[in-house]
Image (tube, rainbow, N blue to C red; front, side, top):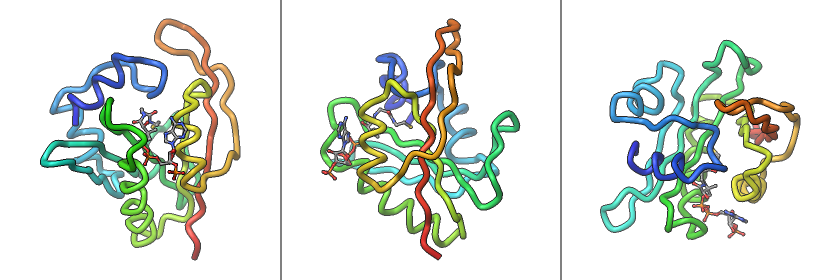
Length: 152
Ligand SMILES: CC(C)(COP(=O)(O)OP(=O)(O)OC[C@H]1O[C@@H](n2cnc3c(N)ncnc32)[C@H](O)[C@@H]1OP(=O)(O)O)[C@@H](O)C(=O)NCCC(=O)NCCS
């Protein structure tokens, strides 16, 4: 999982992550996180093709309302737009329902047109915008916030 996301991080321009993961930090963020709701992986011929994590509010600087969880999706570079993310979301949506998540938040860099299109295709709708959140080098980048409401 770290190897897969590190290629996406190195390419830049999509994920909000800027520092590479290793096995320990990936475990802490997507497997052992106490606030984790679910983390599904997709395989293609025995090779990891992508993963998607869903977590209850965990960032004290950006709290989410009660019942909300936030999502992150990563498909292997070279294997995008072949159904990996959509298949992962079918599983995550059911896990969210089981865990009684009411709303899934996706907070996406405004310049990540592919990520925005992907979540819109899953049924997410815009609800907020965080303006000029700086990258590590100070470059301001807006974040578009999308929500997916889980039917009761
Ligand atoms: C965004 C991302 C997760 C999408 O995963 P994916 O496996 O390519 O998505 P899918 O193939 O399942 O696409 C599902 C739908 O979204 C659409 N979609 C996906 N990527 C798209 C893009 N770049 N531009 C336009 N539409 C896109 C697909 O066309 C598809 O539509 P359909 O249902 O009409 O066929 C993947 O491109 C990725 O890992 N990007 C880098 C990391 C990132 O930006 N993550 C999101 C922020 S956490």
